[in-house]
Length: 240
Image (cartoon, rainbow, N blue to C red; front, side, top):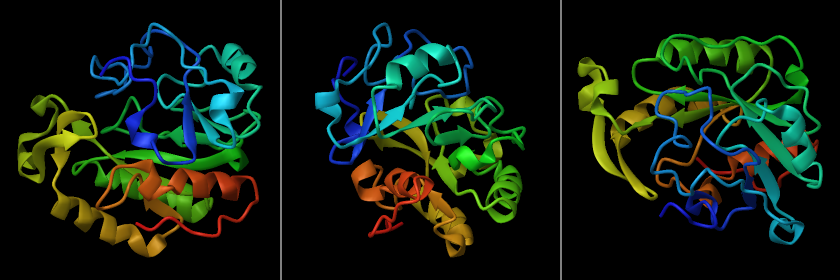
C-alpha cells in the first residue's frame, strides 16, 4: 500500500498528482493524510510525473505537503506542465497557475484565514469540515463565496484517532473504510444534512466527492474549478 504508483482516489479522472518535496510537511495540520504512515506512498522520494505520464491531464501540485514551502523549487519542477494548479494552506497565492487554498488547515477547529491579496488567482477555497466547526464554515462561505465570489469546497474530515472527536459529537461519526484506510467518518445522514443546507449555492459552494462516492472521477469539481479559473467552459458540471 505504501508504494503505490498512483493515488487510487484520482484513478479514472483527468487529474494527476505531483509532489516535488520529500519528507513530512512541517505545517502538521491535524489528521494530515500526507504525514500519516498510511499515506499511499512513501514520502522519502518525490512524485514528479513525466510529460508522457501527464498527457492532457491537469497536474495537481501538492495534494500532500504545501506548494508555498520551498516554493522556488516547486515552481522550477512544475514549470514543465502546461495545465496545473497548486495547493497550499499558507496565505500566498502569487503562483503562475490557479491555487487551491485550505483556509483552516492548521487551525481546523479554531479559525479561518482571511486573505485579501491575490484572490483573483484562487481556483477555490477548501474548508476542512466537521460537525463542530460549522460556525467557521459559515464565516468562510460569507467572506470567500458570497462577498468575493470564490468557490468554496467542503472536505469532510476523517479521524484516525477517536480522541480528536469531541464526546458530544461522537454519535455523528462511524468507523468505516475510505478508499484504502479506515477512519472515524461522518455518517451519511449527517453529511447530507450539512450539505443540503448549502446545496442551493451550487456551484459556488460544493463538496469534495459526492454523497455516494469519494472518487475524483465521480466528483470532477477540481476539473470544473480549473476550467472556470482558466476562463474555459466545462460542458458537464459535476453532479453532487
